[in-house]
Length: 123
Image 1 (cartoon, rainbow, N blue to C red):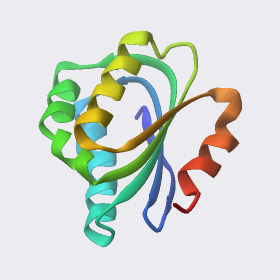
Image 2 (image 1 turned 180 degrees about the vertical axis):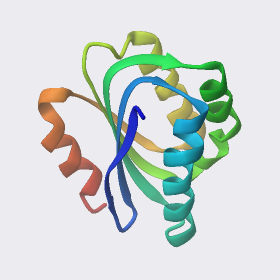
Image 3 (image 1 turned 180 degrees about the horizontal axis):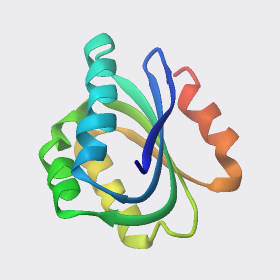
Image 4 (image 1 turned 90 degrees about the vertical axis):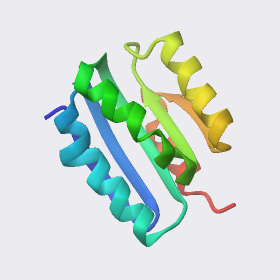
């Protein structure tokens, strides 16, 4: 499975995303972790580490779209990416952040520790 939880502590969740995201990635890994965190903490913080991103399958794209309202619970999100993350994805994430009022920041993979510091930093 190309998705794994890398950290789950308090209201902070980290995910490592690799390759193409499928419906199973959402229903078996992403959504259960997000739902549990949102149930415990109304607002959550997220770090997405993206490697060799290839987009979504049709089922994965549908899960992403239909679960968009969960993003309203995201207080802060760091996206850490390699060169596979393209300009269109950055634009889409910025649009979602604007709609949901979440604080969003992008980091290159060599700045992973800085991204973790930023996600965990108290307000």
